Image 1: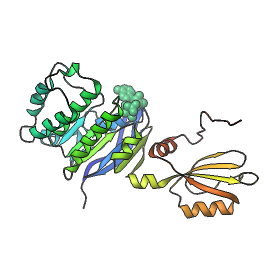
Image 2 (image 1 turned 135 degrees about the horizontal axis):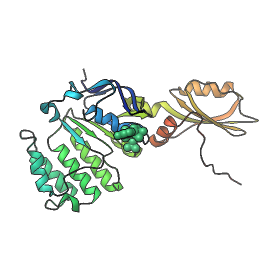
Image 3 (image 1 turned 45 degrees about the vertical axis):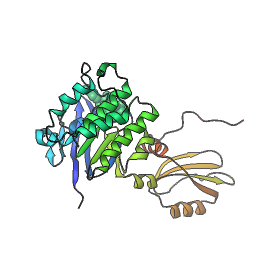
Image 4 (image 1 turned 180 degrees about the vertical axis):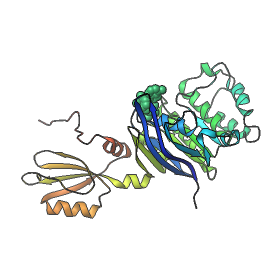
Length: 307
Ligand code: ATP
């Protein structure tokens, strides 16, 4: 049976009167790369900090590697890697000094060769001080430092923020390198859905502090569909199809966003509503995420009007 390495139960956080996280129930199995996505202010950083015991919940609890987040013992912490948003590192230290400093916390687990290989792979100047590195280089140092102790669980908060495409790819490949070490688990938040699509096998979506999805990427990709239907005269007055999330209509065309509706059901509905034709349009993960988290009465802000 797959072990659950990260779990939260009714996790809730208020900052003053702001509800940042509302009753989060989450279970992440061992051995997956999990993309944690949500719009700005959705509660990702709050959830991550609560999971790591860096914040106190208003209610609920969470456990990492079977241990309550509020009571993580050093022995458990040593099995967890954390990359913070913005890669906060001691700026006055060189990469070499930082390695030495960090290694002291993990005397038994630090993998010198792995750290050296990562630094070489990223082409980083070992003697240069952190304050003289670019944002991307700092991110790479952060990743190398987080991976060198060979953590069983790696949690990263928007680790690729501000990195260019090539560096982002390199960074993510570094992550995959980790997961290739058997049984490792990664949870990373990101706004770049293309990255999530490329490296994750699981996705967690939160919206305004509320969990909206926690499933395999495959399930999420298969569940959200865009259907375009055209009609000879006019569109039906009422659209009553299971799983309807959004409906946009023009005079003779309907665009439906559906969740979990089977293709056969769509075909049947199209037929019984006398659609001339219907087409299930291709969507990438970014389109699916945007539609899935759009408010119910969402309309596009701009629409190209052909003259
Ligand atoms: P982003 O993607 O923009 O980084 P996020 O999903 O990580 O956002 P959080 O940083 O967890 O979101 O913030 C969730 C909500 O809690 C937001 O409304 C934010 O304004 C609020 N919030 C976060 N930290 C504090 C704080 N220290 N005091 C008050 N409100 C806060």
